[in-house]
Length: 304
Image 1 (spheres, rainbow, N blue to C red):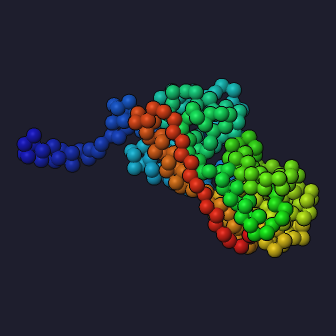
Image 2 (tube, one colour):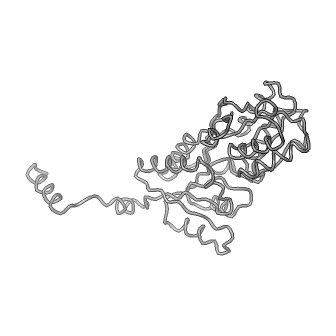
Image 3 (tube, rainbow, N blue to C red):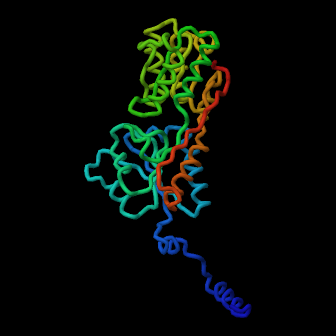
């Protein structure tokens, strides 16, 4: 096209206020330009998690750079008609980012569809080899946290786990057990549900069973805040009488007095990895499931 014709076209664009219709361009290529981040409503503690915003911001930034739009959807587990699953697989989205879901959750049915799906966290039920996922090395994080407490001279170390239908909670419990070895006792373990109150309740249970507990690994920072309250309610001091290590290095770790020693969870890096895995599936660059496991590191503060 000659320069004079290019100039006329550009003049017409300016006069008409034309802009590229990204949606039309995606549809012409067989794509919608949208990705869903799906969260199970029944397990909505994700919204109480101070790191939830980190995931959403990272997803949004990474997807926008790829020309994709993020939509957040809440799954109502109790609905019998499978509405959301049908909607997600009916061509409204190019792919799905699935928040960590427990064993038996109906959302796991998405993994049997042709929809590109990437799971945040290791999937349950033996699915880890058949789908793409990105996660922190939960078992090794718990192992390092517990060994740190032992190395500090703590003789009786308990734990408050997350809900054990989640693989992250199971892996962290396994890491704790491996670190203690023969010193592990069933009564040193209490199950929580990621909430602050469950951390308080779980720590109280452990302290009642073993009053000589002098260390606690708590499977999330939010629960560790509750555990710290239980220790003080029992007339004990942190860290002098009971040292506490959390997990995640969330903003909650800085709200306690003393501040919380914790294992850093690379939330932003994991979210970035999940987006790249999903984009590879959507674009067809990847035809086989891929898995990314990222390391954690100890962040030393005042509670241990």
